[in-house]
Amino acid sequence: MPESKRSTQLFEEAQNYIPGGVNSPVRAFKAVGGNPLFIKRAHGAYMIDEDDNQYVDLINSWGPMILGHGNEQIQEAVAKAIKDSLSFGAPTAMEVKMAELICDMVPSIDKVRMVNSGTEATMSAIRLARGYTGKSKIIKFEGCYHGHGDSFLIAAGSGAITLGEPNSPGVTKGVAQDTITVPFNDLNKVHEAVAASRGNIAAIIVEPVAGNMGCVLPKDGFLEGLRSICDAEGIVLIFDEVMTGFRLSKAGAQGVFNVQADITTLGKIIGGGMPVGAYGGKREIMDFVSPVGPVYQAGTLSGNPVAMAAGYAMLSQINENETLYNDLALITSKLENGFQDILDELSLPYTINRIGSMISLFFTDQKVVDFDTAKSSNLSLFGKYFRNMLDNGVYLPPSQFETYFVSTAITKEIADDIIDASRKSLKALL
Ligand code: PMP
Figure 1: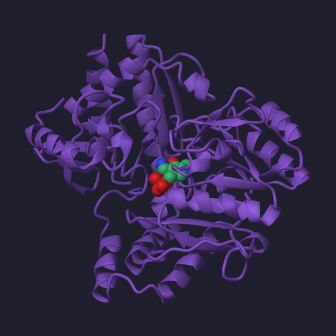
Figure 2: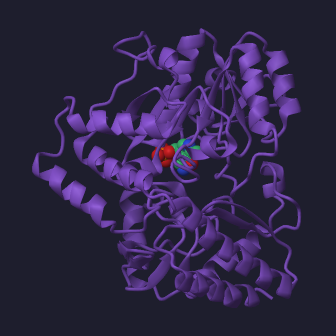
Figure 3: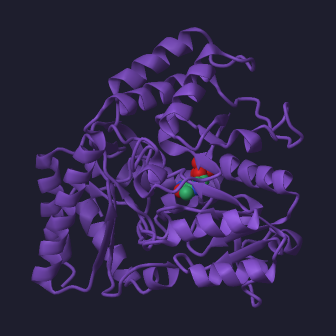
């Protein structure tokens, strides 16, 4: 680990006042060992910690900073919005512009409601699906993360295709019995689960490309299969595009795989770094939301003018950039090829999954297609690799089960630096 006196001090102090010293668990470096680094500043492709170490950032705030840190247009929009006050709790013109732009960019979204996080978006989306269908149960996939709403903190129970079990204290058995968890990429299991609870399923929620067990792509036909099951059974299909939305294309994963969701949840990039989430979809479903419909959902700071200014500045830049996704994919595939060459040379077991600017390196020689195969990775090797990469100036997500997010600030030269750092870090594992 790099010299980190000040981060270590801050972490000690933080633990007195903040549970575990962090405001979100993965930041604590528990999965990789060592103390978390406290960040004071970031610009472009780089983050700088409290001890003045500089790192190439491959987390990018877990996705939002797709244009790199310190994007001028976003910063100017925020500075301008702040002058008019930080919050009104009343409708604004910017909310309308934002909603219109989202509806234009994502064809399956006719109407959209802004919230403050991805968690709020998914919680609201399943309430809406339940209100709309009058049914209770949802199907989710092992290894997919949809925020920390009670209904999602559920593991497959002993009667896996019918009943879930809480996987966090504080989540009740009552809530768990309405969530059915099946393996990602396994349509047969979805069919079985649907048959076992026929007529009681409100929604299937899925990350169309999973990013929360590392990056795991849908198998050919998986998303189409979900679409046809939902159509045949009157189930609402929810794509959780909090991670993939505006990352894989202007229309998210839907734009890449050409499968349309009934409801889409968004977050991360949509706020340009500010706390924003959203859920949107078909008009007839969205018109079930209060005040036009009976399903209640609200938010004091929802559609916050400063957050909307940041989000709009982000999305309009994305919308106007015709080469963005191609450029990001090129840089990320350069990284992929670079990693591959080194790993082959060193004969280390690995699998790399990549789509566009999402990439994960798993320390396993199995194909990674679901959570079980992701878990075949050598986690202690990953921990060492992560720490070595920090020593070599690259900040990876501090868990094997996360995805690296590439930003446009990563130039070819910086990509070469990352590959060099990777060579040194992997060699040091032998
Ligand atoms: N859904 C997905 C797919 C996510 O990746 C995340 C966050 N990583 C969430 C929902 C929750 O979003 P938030 O952390 O903003 O509550």
